[in-house]
Length: 219
Ligand code: G3P
Image 1 (cartoon, rainbow, N blue to C red):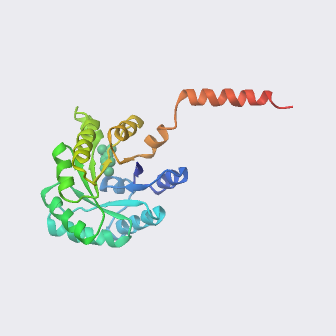
Image 2 (spheres, rainbow, N blue to C red):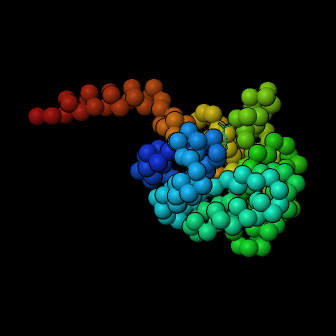
Image 3 (spheres, rainbow, N blue to C red):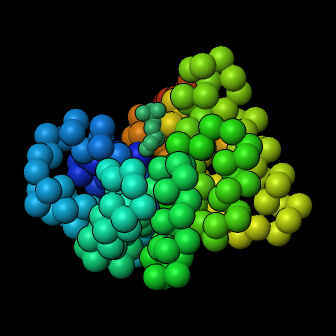
């Protein structure tokens, strides 16, 4: 079980690292744009900053090309940034082809935007490091995102597939718990979902009571 944070915000990454629970970071162009990162040099530098912060932890960096040659070229540039960069490739025909290339080149990689069980099938056919279903977006379209995780996990278990399931597009703490419950190897989520795991009124009430009673123990 691994915990990733889904952000390009360095302050959020530092906070999650400080909790001592962080195994990796996933990013995407929307998250990078949100941080005001502009231009190729700045993008590559930002990935380097995050990769250095993480040390050994995986940091996914997304290719923008959609053709095989472009995906391979961009992926090579991204993989050169640091050893812990995971090349993030879309679940499209040329992406699947490129995954075979990255596998052969020894680069870890993530096949993203998986919305159906058959995408999990491609994941196991192509020696993929991570396959990432976007469960929140599935829920947004009135289907059950967690059910997709369960379906892919079932296929991988039955056939002994090593590809790791990285649950993404997490909207709340329940998504995290349910994803791990049904077989996700990794969950990537925003900081507020991680912090949400720590919130429970009974914890607050229990702690307040103990602290109040601790006063009575004083001389
Ligand atoms: O990194 C991709 C994924 O986690 C997207 O999440 O919330 O934009 O659907 P969201």
